[in-house]
Length: 160
Image 1 (cartoon, one colour):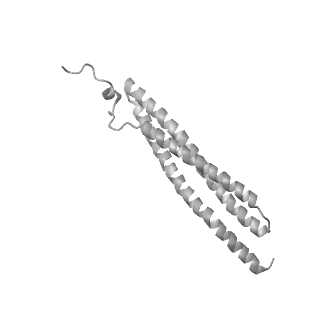
Image 2: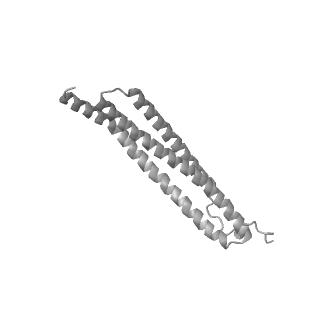
Image 3: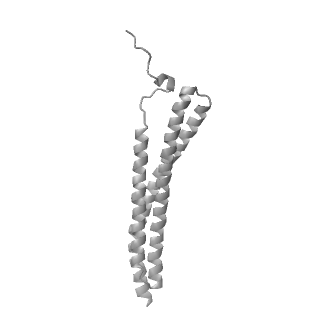
């Protein structure tokens, strides 16, 4: 292969690699979003664990429920984060296969397509896990809830 055709071939591969690189940037941004949510979940859990030490028995029960909910959200967010990282690794591997195939003069079209489909499946699964975590966050959300379990307890008899 002469130098001009090799340069043309590499330029073509760079053109093909641009779309996965943009996809990689999007996955990176999404990974940041999930990572921030996971960090907030962990921070909230630590705050509740500190409150648990000095809480009354009724309050402890409410705090334990909240901690279990946060643990569930953290597991789901962690899965989403792992899937995003897996997707990013697969996209990066796809770009490498594109270049290696061009430089080696081999046709790895099947490998490139398979790895890309695997990356998209990982991204779809990550998006679904993210949606699940958001659902759990809103399901457990109690806007305007009382600060303590004692205050949240139903009142005794209403005044007549």
